[in-house]
Image 1 (tube, rainbow, N blue to C red):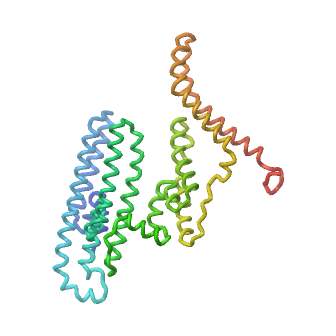
Image 2 (cartoon, rainbow, N blue to C red):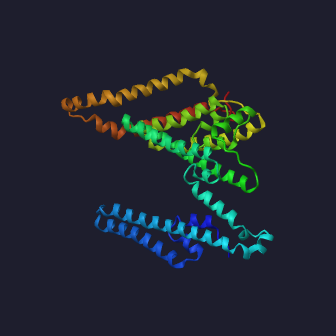
Length: 368
């Protein structure tokens, strides 16, 4: 029975499953028993003695078992890929009927390319696309190194948020290698072009890359900006980042559900506009159309946010100590204990009043 090397590798990420799939029952039982026994022993020791010193040791030991399991699977698959070509002559009749097992060289190339593509750019090197692979490799590790360098030099951990770009580069590199592999195995000639050359070609042809737009849509607003929807993309990006910042500063954890809502709306909205862009009927319509006509409310919101930040960071630390010394009242305690709850209550009450007042008495539910 023909076994898929790709499926075996992915199953090996769970200790023992890949070996069990290939029929190696001893290893398929040994690796999961060792892996989960170590984790179980660490958890049991922590529950019984409530001492966490053993947790790092057990996690390290479990990781070593997992790594040995994956390395053993890679060695097994490489040996298996060398044995398969020796049986190619015996499977010539299967090749004539189109049976998948009769194409070992194609399967081995596909497995090797997919495996190497887990490191951005290396899969492209396997396909002979050195310039394209170097672009992904330098871009991925160059961006990561620059982000860590800037965060280390400036002593600002906030710069690490830009590491969110790393999964975007990785996913784009991985699926680009798979797409080029499919073209090569279908008989097409591959051109060794960089990403910048691809973008220039799309720009000259007046088109947008659907795959690149989808990958950029992972970060709210980026996909819209690539499609030319600057206002819509800027509003979505600002809403996503500002909501994270404001909810963290005001400690409004009850409203954290808004962040995934904004992300999913932005992602699927970008996919919808990508399809429209192919037909040429895309239009840059902002999410909040009346924002330009209501700058007063935006100014009031920014003013209140600035006043809160001054009070929280400057005024309260200075006044709290003096008030506690003179009046024996701990303002910090009441502030941290009741501020978040009071603010949430006020927001909910204000929202409820707005909905009640805004609802019209007519049956159609429209305002008069």
